[in-house]
Length: 253
Image 1 (cartoon, rainbow, N blue to C red):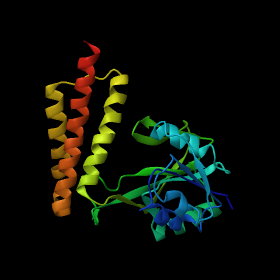
Image 2 (tube, one colour):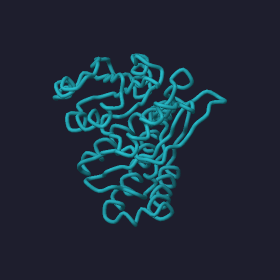
Image 3 (tube, helix red, strand yellow):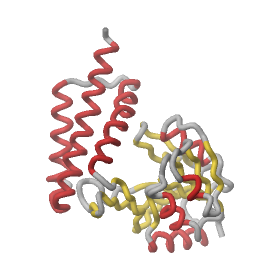
Image 4 (tube, rainbow, N blue to C red):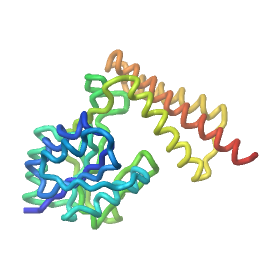
């Protein structure tokens, strides 16, 4: 039997953390919650579970998650966001993996709930994520805020056909607020990589994003909220490149 650490990062997650912890408490041998000094009831709720609650200054999604996995007791880790939970089928499958850990890492699907509706198109599903792995063979990478686990060359990855349930946004206003925050981060990251923006790129990137997600990725099949998701995703792309254009302009003054 392989011992498993479950690692979660939090900031003001009182609405979500109990559901997340409840979904993994029977499969985890160690639960680590790394919190960025929440100002709500997150810590109080976590105290009702058998977790190690550690406070650590947030320095970026990738940096925080890599610091968090270093706090785990065991090298085999399941990493979740606080607004995620395992469905019953995935929970059972993780138990079986613990009994016979055969791969270096495991991917799984993520199904997102948006304002009370499960989104099954729009490019949001199956949204394959690598979240269960041997941390001696991989760590968090990518570009903030869009992190991903990057494994060493030659590692074996298996896919599990069950879902992480992602409770993303309870209101459209909450989504728009996150877009404003995340596009600040993504525009800055793109700028630091030397990427350039232009009026053409702003229009092209946002227009194609909507066309791809709503038409090619069948977002229209998700009804009203499918349209909202695709429209907001297009808006996020527009804002990222608009903010990047401003950063480019300031750099050349």
